[in-house]
Amino acid sequence: MVYGRRFSDALLPPACKLCSGATEGTLLCAACTTELPCNTPACPGCALPSVQAVLCPACQHKPRAFDAAFAAFVLATPVQQAIHSLKYGARFQQASLLATAFVSRLSTRIEPLPTLLIPVPLHWRRQWSRGYNQSLELARLIGAELGITVDATAARRLHATPDQIGQTAAERRRNLKGAFAASPRVAGQHLALLDDVMTTGATLEELSRACKAAGATRIEAWAIARQPLARDNVVM
Ligand SMILES: [Zn+2]
Ligand SMILES: [Zn+2]
Image (cartoon, rainbow, N blue to C red):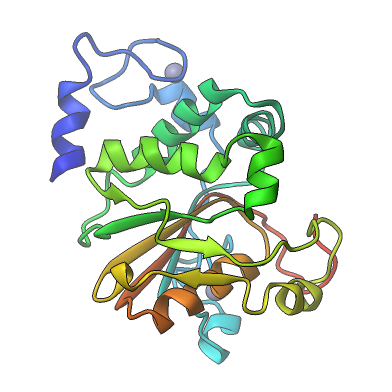
């Protein structure tokens, strides 16, 4: 597998990609790996932290618009700070660290990887004011590590949605309805949709609906970190 090969090639001499300390031939050293707030086990349907890697009652009752979800970490120290400084402080070095840590969590994956990686698009006005899309920065690095093509223009955000901080899950769903359009290029593809943080999952679900409507066959929702709150009310 592509990323298996890269793991060994990239480590001569072996050095932890986070702290440059010695490793056992892995991307991250044992100390860094232990300190990361790995989101495991988690529900494979919505990526919420769980006691077992089986579908949670909510996913059993009502499957999400995507077919599977994977969030490498829980939104906690130090991942939370790294995402924040990438998103609001343009610290691109953080994207590299986060992407490396994310990929290291996929090293034990046995299922086939997606064929196309699509970052959650920002509305053009927000991207213009921020100057970049943090999810695209992460997708480029993750796609390169895993050997998955990144298509940053396969999905578009049709209208600007208000900042979602403080909104309830129901408000998020309402504001996002019809927010995305997907290109026919996704037809027949196994997609991974990438966001920096998965909060309620409403954004990734709405984007999944657009991609399914355009003919995508399988969709995985990927996020660097998962907001651990399970409650269906005001979230950060
Ligand atoms: Zn380390
Ligand atoms: Zn679930």
